[in-house]
Image 1: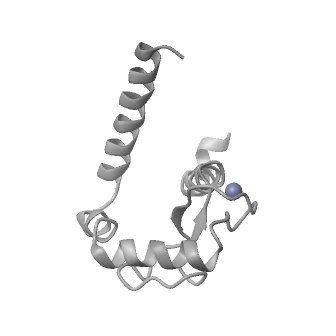
Image 2: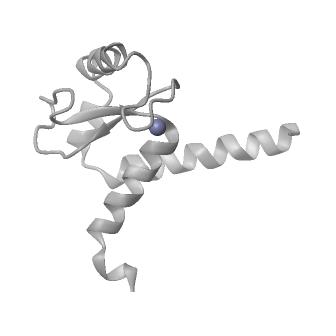
Length: 105
Ligand SMILES: [Zn+2]
C-alpha cells in the first residue's frame, strides 16, 4: 500500500467517524468522550479478556450499545458489550436496517 492510498484510507475513516458523531445527540458524544466512559471501556475489555463478545477474536474492542436507555449509566452485558471491528460494524448495520424497515424492499 503506498502513502497516498494510506492517506486516503485515514481521511475516509475520519470522515466516517465525524459523520457518525453528528448522527447522535450531544449527550451521546459527551458520554463517549468522558472519563467514566473510558473507565467502563477498560473494565469491559478486562471482563471479556480482550476478546470479542460475539466471535471471541482477540482484537481491539469497540464498545457497542445494545440500546441507549441507560446512557450515562451503562452496565456490561445489560447495556453495552465489547465487539471487534467486524462484529461492531455488523451490529450497527443490523440496527440501521431495523430502524429502516421499508428500505429492505
Ligand atoms: Zn467479533
